[in-house]
Image 1 (spheres, rainbow, N blue to C red):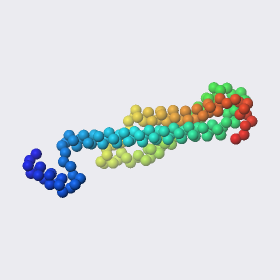
Image 2 (cartoon, one colour):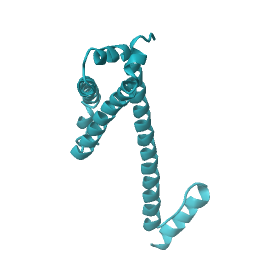
Image 3 (cartoon, helix red, strand yellow):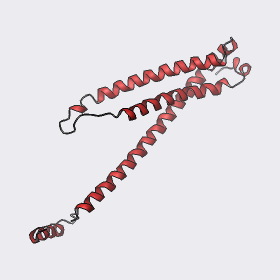
Image 4 (cartoon, rainbow, N blue to C red):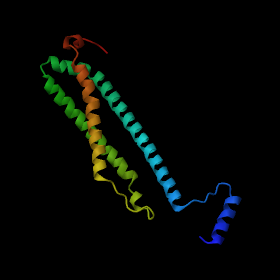
Length: 166
């Protein structure tokens, strides 16, 4: 650097208390460290969102199973096998999960419809592997959130639950 540039930078750092003179390597190191901190914070947020979604799925499944307890018990007492009950609950759960995914995808598509038209941001790209992972996780969570509570209710003795009122 020339002497005049060094003098100019020194005068700026004296007049502006927050100004710092650093090399390119120092600056890029700080930018990289900030990016890593932001990535860690984003992963914490993603983990919390997954935890909240799991809690919501299991709470909804437990409430639905509790509401349908008599219906499930009466079907078993009428002769439905355990496999038939699991098949019926699985089919219902899968249809409800797929309906939720379609509704969610529609909402996302509507909210991101203009995102790809930003002249400074470029086109919007969705990695198919990550999208598939999210969709597969949602389906698994929807099925588990419904099937596990129903299985717990299905393990209770049928005669104990047959005449029970809520």
